[in-house]
Length: 273
Image (cartoon, rainbow, N blue to C red; front, side):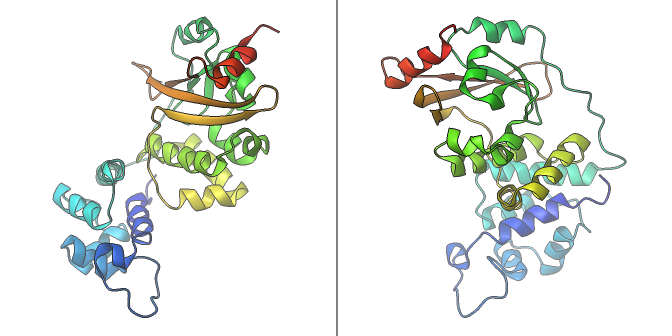
């Protein structure tokens, strides 16, 4: 949207997260700001204070790749966050006009049949705004939030059952927000995405705090724990499969290690009736 300053907000948020001692600066006396001061970041990145001020205030939207890399190093950003910084800068420099038009998301052709064929494997199709677009019966049995029509991030923060379902809820919540940031990239002009963020920011202090950190972490294959109300604890491996030819649709599937109690519990969950 015209007037947005996502790049500046990112720089200020990440600056506040860097402790002076971690950047090789002495932490002497009381400090008026959390993290690095603007002049400290400018010195570490090798840019002028006036230039960094213009960047943070949105008055300069064309930093070079070398400047972005220097800022990323000074802010101690990992590869995901550095790539996100570059995406924000590219978007800021080309942004002109109203928000992008994005059609209503629909499941990619044939994905529903594919999910249904994975008997015993919880699997669902996730859209770019983390809406569930399709799911098989095992996924729905694993968690109500995997039912088509639900939004995964909204349910993590606003459905009380999520805290019981995920024993490591704090980590799940942080990963959900960071993954949403990664998918959104610089495209926060998407009206539906903006509406979701505004809704959750107003309804959940936890979401608002995590969103304001500007963490970015794409969904990756990793182990996830559940406590199901019927079959009990499960430790499942999550697999994330990008659907070609779509605008960010992803199949998420879960598997249990063969011969484990989780495999037995998952088989019970997937059994007819």
